[in-house]
Length: 355
Image (cartoon, rainbow, N blue to C red; front, side, top):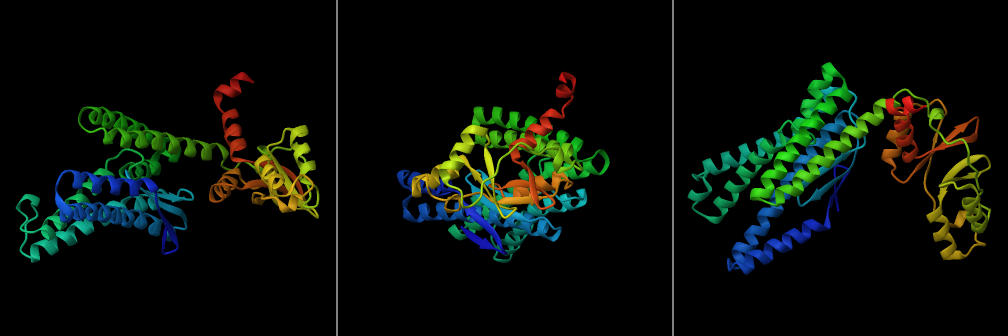
């Protein structure tokens, strides 16, 4: 993992397996060490370009007050995980378009360099391995820009389309349209992939699930915007102190059926205990050990009137945390990501009709 401009960039292990597979394929094809090395370097260069593309998204997002948890590089491309969507559609439009713009700028720089050197931008006409390498990178940048500008979510073009539609239709409706186009594109890409290139089927699956997930997240946010935390919190819960035994905590889990138990020290929520935490603590120090010796999750303290969409954003920033609702210095409820999803489901028209 590397960190650039304070943003973690992580390479998935499958990318290393891809490089190894390419090297083995080239060698098995009898292309020789030089051609094998050039092929591997080309793939490394492509993913360096993808990292630059995603880093551009992250840096522009930061300019608008949106942090990026990490950039993940996968064999099928890159992904910048923003903590939340920008508030203004115009900001989302800028964030979406800057990635393809970086690819077009890189392509222009490569074209200028090849032209000044007297080379050709046709790979087949390249006079040397270096010229062929640069020409391939030029066209790869063009292809990445064009592919990402397809107006189907979750590609950059789909995000740009959502931003433009959101200016008139609102974000939820705009997301539904963009996600629908994304799923239509995924189906077409899957059919094409089955006929010509199975690798495209995997990309189609990522597009399909990415579109569906984004639509669900936006629907959830729309349902909880301006709703107070007290409306979705679990009011029936017990607490433990750091000095209580892990055995007592284990019995409490069994007796109450709670999934999480806040750890309270002198009236302050200092953490949250889960069943796994208790099991790990008992395995390390026995049931007589204190709760304070066991691993635990972060407790995000929120007020009863804090909007649920803000609570959701805080939970997204700390995926392992659990929100503890505190009123007048005392815990009065807990909120998990699962509870938020249940709360949204119960607000649907179907659930309302059932009631």
